[in-house]
Image (cartoon, rainbow, N blue to C red; front, side, top):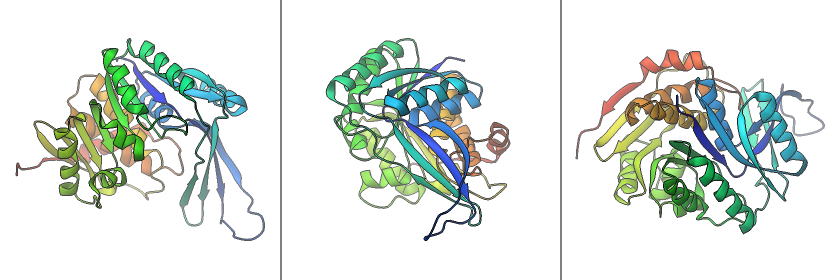
Length: 317
């Protein structure tokens, strides 16, 4: 299986705790469930590894928290390449309330990167990308970098002869549309920001995907619709991938998107077509929501859900 390269510009150390009930007065005693390295591309690399693939995560790391991030990745056994920065890597807090079965994910903005640090990161990415067919860039951008940073990533990856899978949001998403990539994943909220209206149905997703394809922003557009599933679109048409019934309670959607991207990219690297790859992605995302907070998905559960993903080609309009 070819190795996959991932990029995380703004990683985190995720501190995951649980409480019986969150009180609004006094102290709430918490139990630490786990502490782990996080951030879009790192989560994708972890998902690839859980599915039996190989991945290398390029990421920034700054000061004491950055050192902890590196140690956590080493202990986990994830292959990674850290780029030192002057600012402190951020810490995120995930709280799971056992009585309500609700998860709360509190994420600060992260350190400020300067232009020199951004350029060093692009250089490191381009050197590493030359040995990888697929590169995944996922997650938010820290302050200091241009909103067009992912457009620069797309150019560097293209120059290295690799294919880029991009999953981002906000201004970084809009500015990245200037450069074509191989595959873009948008959730329904990100898609709505592009459409200027809610994206709730497969028809809504089709309009967004057609816009992305017509603009030359991507060869494959994947818009996810939560519990409905996802729409995968190429120049050959649109395919609905309807999510399977869940065998348990949905506990948290944190990390479901990264897990989906991991599965899609792994299967693309193995030679699957985009629809086949997305079918596994929908099953893995469904498995991910069955786990609390940012706990990793169960590959066996994902495999068991895959046959229940309904694949339906949309009729041409």
